[in-house]
Length: 61
Image (cartoon, rainbow, N blue to C red; front, side):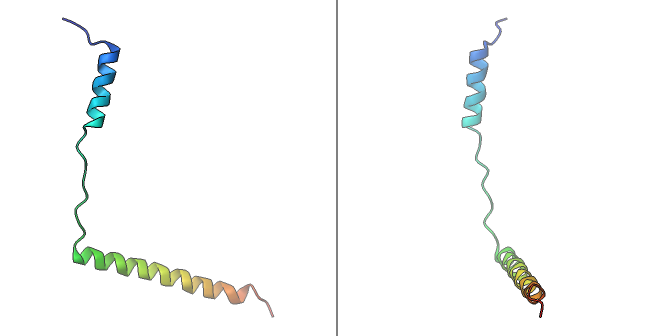
């Protein structure tokens, strides 16, 4: 029985890596898009609110 040479196994490993099947993402459904938009908007509003709350505190009168 013939052993694989290191060069052969390395080349085989790299070839397998190069021809690995590409994982594709499923397109977002309308529901998922709406949920993502809602989440993004909520996070934006939260950042804006926190910025407004911090601003008056930084200017003591």
